[in-house]
Amino acid sequence: MGADRGDPACQSMLGLLYFRGQGVPQDYVLAHKWLNLAASAAEPDAVGWRDQIASMMTSQQIAEAQRLARDWKPK
Image (cartoon, rainbow, N blue to C red; front, side):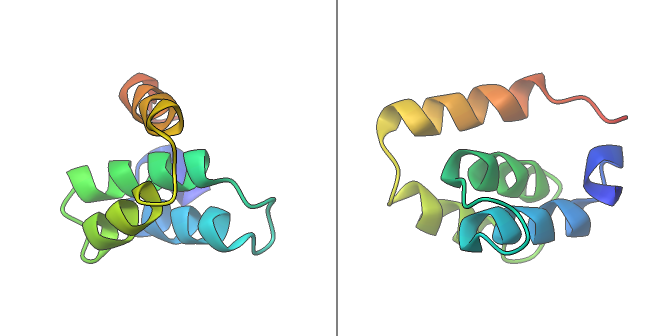
């Protein structure tokens, strides 16, 4: 999977899939994680999507998503 290897475009797309629950269970924490990783690589629109999702999350969910992004390593 491209997202697991660090492809920012794939990370952004995967984040949107988790946000929408398309093909995967809807999960805002994982959506935020993948979009945060994409945003850190300057992927267009990732910051906007990440921030939109963050507005629907609790502070604990955001902290968990940030921890997951921080701890992520490409495969």
